[in-house]
Length: 473
Length: 98
Image (cartoon, rainbow over all chains, first blue to last red; front, side, top):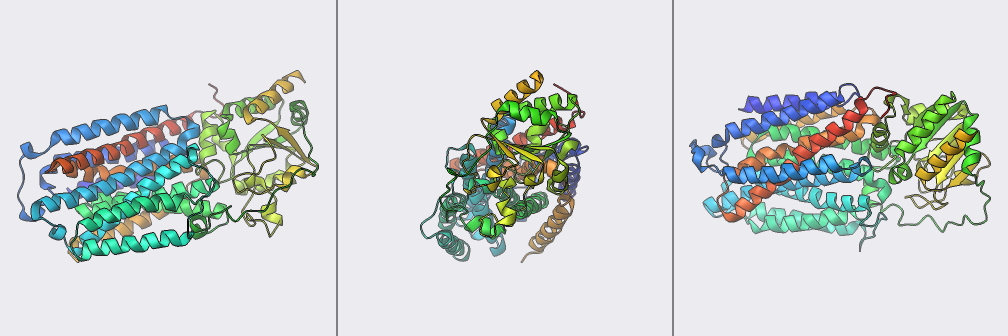
């Protein structure tokens, strides 16, 4: 049986490796799904040997004593909800959905740990049935699982806009959460050290709060980091649940996901030139970048016709998509414009910042939805050398990731963040609703440069208007 | 500590290293599907949920079992389906139009 779980684990590893390359990615996902099917079937087949309480007694329970209806009802509810969510979601809402799925995964791991305590409680009257190290993993899987659960749903709310995307300051700042962690440790010690099941429930309640207060001070621009981290935590929670029920399949899969999520977390933090601790505790943006007075600075305001003309006579155009493009659902409009330009033998490529959009790689998914081939999507390192040779850069709904202050102004809050150096192109067109600052809440000198044309409009209608103007040339 | 527990730690650490090795070279294009795929894999906790559901011995435990099953299944079914939906879009031939 252990070997069969190992097979599932091996399939997960192969699947993840497949997900690493565009050509093999879909098969990779299918391999991972097959691994999951193996794990589920093995569990059902050997279910009689997996009784959490009587494992040491070497008794095998009868098939009839298995509560099949509980398994089936839960599975049907979950499958229906999961399938509907997965098939209905718009690609722009993908970050919210992944956040929600993270939350359900973390929540499930915590529930598994709870079920174990309750089962142990019915048999022996206390949680003393376990070795101390197992109890520690019970506490860990509850704490991590519940934090992932509530944290993910706060992230979901922030991404959807139902909870403010701005950082919310907590009383006492980061110390608030530090105190919570200390209280959680105390509750765990009470639960584990003194065999007091109530401690686990207090731990769960505190964890629920920590998930909320841990995520709510983090600004909307940092959501790619937060989702990656929650992803990592949902894996760690599963691994901890694996220790609780003594199942190596869970430990392998959980550790894999934990590691994968952690790598993405670190990569996202690097893309913003900030340490993970800084993202989590700094409450970025709350310290205020000072009032923004854009009123008296000259801005080159352009019409769609102006933009169409400069695009039509360009040789090389780079599109820099940002969150504004996602909000406006303008991925198809940008593709149509690119097609029109390509008919005029203009080279169109896309420069994508690692934190464009609201989760890692989000822009790539949106553009893929619009049938943009992935080989014209350039990452940061490949884009920057090309800007000086680029005739027109079209910035659609992006702001902070093209802000030259990050390179030039040491006093800027985003100083040091790697940016797309669009200001080095011959002409830069910025499509934006207004001069208002982006998520980081800071002004962007790019908007006032002589080589910059500002087109104030919603991303989608702007792109459509440019395309119309282009056809009339 | 019991031998099984120590064995568990060994497995955990080794699997984490494998995870680091396998993931570190993924291009940014695939970050979103990678994350949702990894997310689906974290639904492995379904194994624990099945056990919890199968041996529930009180009404409360049954409720926990159903919830754990439902949550984990949302994660598994939704995660793999949505990843497949995304990757289907990537798979189209470059230049193909709707």
